[in-house]
Amino acid sequence: MTPLRDRLGPIGARLRPGAGGTLRAFLAWWAQALASWLPAAWRQALGMDRGRLLLHVDGDDLTLRLHRGGGITDLGTVPGLAPETDLAGLATPATDPLARLLKPRVAELPRWLFLPAASALRRRLVLPAAAADRLRDVVGFEIDRQTPFAPADVAFDARVLGRRESDGQLDVELVAVPRSAITPQTAALGPLASTLAGIDVAAADGAPLGVNLLAPADRHRHRDPWRTWNAVLAAVAVLACGLMLWQVLQNRRAAADAFEQQIAAQAQAGRRAAAARQQLNSLVAGQAFLDRARAERPVAVEVIDELARRLPDETYLEKLSIEGQRLMLIGLSNEAAALVGRLQGSALWRSPALAGALQPDPASGRDRFTLTAELVPPTPVPAPAAPRPATEAADADASR
Image (cartoon, rainbow, N blue to C red; front, top):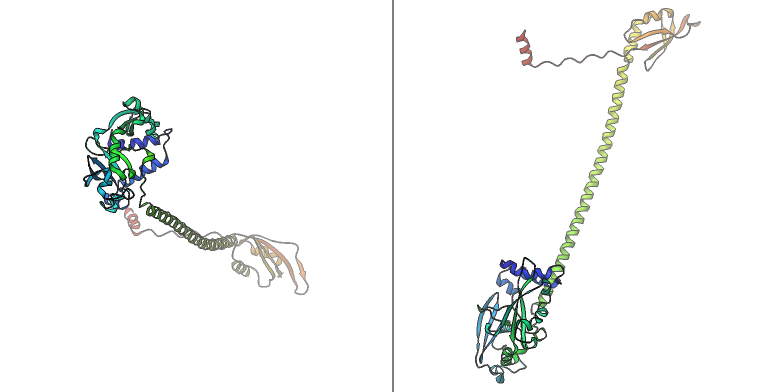
């Protein structure tokens, strides 16, 4: 099993369906995972890796060590430790004995009693994954079977070593220390015993195992000096995030309004262009209609000119009407009966005929006539052929 899987195994067991995992456990693991990407100096500055102060009692001496970032640093040894003297007379029981020995930043760290590896009894257990949420309570029922002590005679804790891939069960290690081995050391600490946040045991290599043998009710809760600042920074971050989202929303609204105005302006221009196009289409259609109508009958000037050449000089026209394809002439003439023959053979009209009988006009001595004819559409003139390019003309001459 890889180290990454070892670290994710406990969290995976807690977050499995039915394992009773909590959101707080996931958030704590997530925050630790994010903090692990930051440099150690940044984590310390942000209060994410404050560390802890390890107290190791060796006879009459008290050794102080700083455990931070996975490493242990020796701070010094207080000689002549005795309960009767309240830590060599450095302070009374009502005060903090280590306040004068350590810097305030170190003195405020959580204090842990650090026991040697030989004082602990360790047993490996296999438990269901559902036991991860209440691991301490579950292993408490295994003390009678795994150790020669009763649960009341030992201080114990358990840690998750990993999770099996085959069945998903947890590999757990039970760590138990007889209270008879802890009581003399807590008594030697004197007033410092009430300030302990936990009791840890050294591993074979001297590093802490990462367990807390101290009962939860006896653990001293240290106030985190960064809690207020963290709350303020979190509030500022939430406020800044809200302002950012509001500003983004306002920007989107302004952009939407500007886009809507632009669309309205373009739509108005489009409507004007559509109206102009419709007007142009109407004009083109009207012009095309006039062109077709003009092409379907001769020009009136040509008709009048043709009549002037064909009608005799003693013929007078009172009315000339062109309606569609129908030509109508009303007038007076001495040769009214011969007018039909004179109008025959014209290219502008056909089928000339008198409409009704001739009526003599006593005033002029001529006959009144009404003559009709059908206009003939003019013959379209073919478009001249486009001139051939010089190269094609040269090729044609060469072929001839």
